[in-house]
Length: 248
Image 1 (spheres, rainbow, N blue to C red):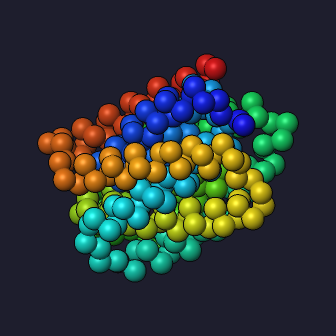
Image 2 (cartoon, rainbow, N blue to C red; image 1 turned 45 degrees about the horizontal axis):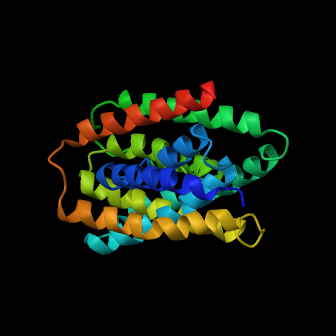
Image 3 (cartoon, rainbow, N blue to C red; image 1 turned 60 degrees about the vertical axis):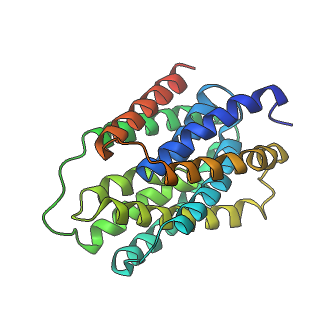
């Protein structure tokens, strides 16, 4: 197996941290899980991305079941269409890099995590009006590309949606729907191709109750922290993970 039994405790700790950040801010599960799992050498990046996809699916379903959801299809349609196309491109790039280019893949993920964290920290105030469809398509395509590579669709779309004149609750729900769609497509390609390892399945199975439990607790007992404060905390973790991965 790719993952030794002694590492599962560390992986569960990373799952708790990633799931908490995802539920509190609407993003960062995949980035934190894949970033820390890679930086700490807990499992290969490709396997970590598969585990992140499985757990994101559970996390998203529990979240949407716990929150009333009224979809804004005028926003979701271009976002979903473009992000799903991006997932296909990201998977193709991952397949190309996963052979003899593992070191390149680690560097690419480290740089991506750091860039996403800086981009989110520098996020400007909300726009007065909604962006056009082209902006939704571009943000969706970039998000899907990251989703295909690392199961981390969040940062481009987070940056885009949090700048729109939309409520934080609606933004989180739109993000969850996009994550779920991207994960379903990604897993629908990875599983038939035989690229989902036994260690990934075991890790995900062990972590599923943890994800569900963390999600339920944060729905019932949300911490009294502002959205901006939570974003700063998450971005700090991302920067640490990105730097650690580059140094390793």
